[in-house]
Image 1 (cartoon, one colour):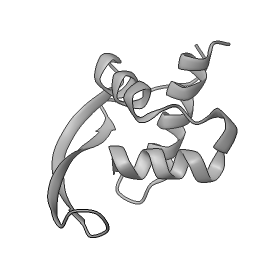
Image 2 (cartoon, rainbow, N blue to C red):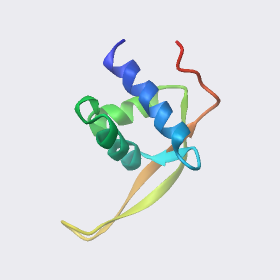
Image 3 (cartoon, rainbow, N blue to C red):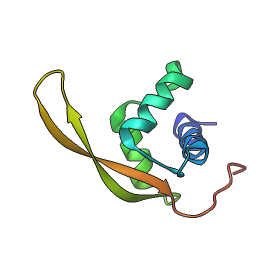
Length: 89
């Protein structure tokens, strides 16, 4: 199984396990690092997985406040499953 397919299946797992079945890009990346630290994709690769696979759809935008470097806010996309998917393929 390739890295991208494995990462896609793990993202599906993370979204299904979440309370509202949707997570922001930041939450997905953070959960990936906590659970599968050595196999976590970069943020750029994760965004490509989310945006280029038909299993995922953008369900909203979330504002995140930055407090460490420069104060301010930025938007992150919130993702959900487009329809019930299986990880058997």
